[in-house]
Length: 279
Image (cartoon, rainbow, N blue to C red; front, side, top):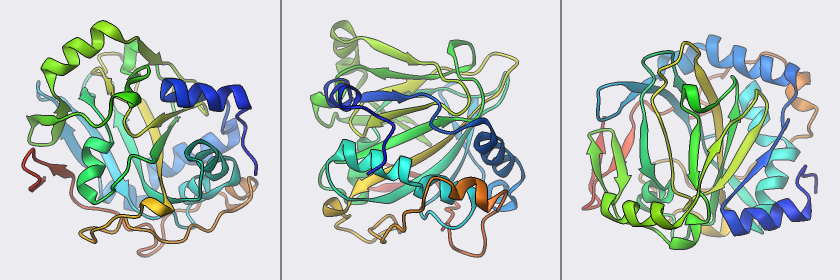
């Protein structure tokens, strides 16, 4: 197993619900990933706007398979998959990937939420899931970096309410009490750095009011034993063919081909009654 995390970092993840993997991807790899996000026609064609409560928006593109594109290779490479398995504690499969693009001055906020607040409705019975957020640009407080409530993954799944037609958020009254008791970690990242966080970790981000964009590539994983019990979408288990760490550079600037990545043309936003809203 190949993971850049040491035992202390793995223990910290279980205690805090997050861990940083600095320099997970090198400058050449980041350049390829950044170019793919900027140039791949499939990513542009499936770009969706997720509005916040003030009308600003974050552009996202979502896909449910890790194919042979450069970003598919990044999601399949040993250092990522082995790390996911070391943290979850068992074999995993690729659940989804996405580009989150907060553009200068107009990039919207994300409200406090848990990813499992969404993924529960995809039929995942347990929160044995996690996400890698990999910086393609410098991410800091000025351009709306990720914020995570330290230790909040231990609170269990929290009821979510509708914030906008494209976002759900954790119960605001409960969040007020949680924030009195827990530290908020600002996840400032340089390009190639990653923050890895638990599916029940509460997180949000501010609007990007700076002159610098904040683009990130996210790859999410689920335990194979936690495969979805529904087949309403295609996030169910498909075997993940892991590749060695050199595959990202060997493959070069390769875009999506055909239907390998299973891009989605809609945003999945469950309502509090469990009825899907589509945007």
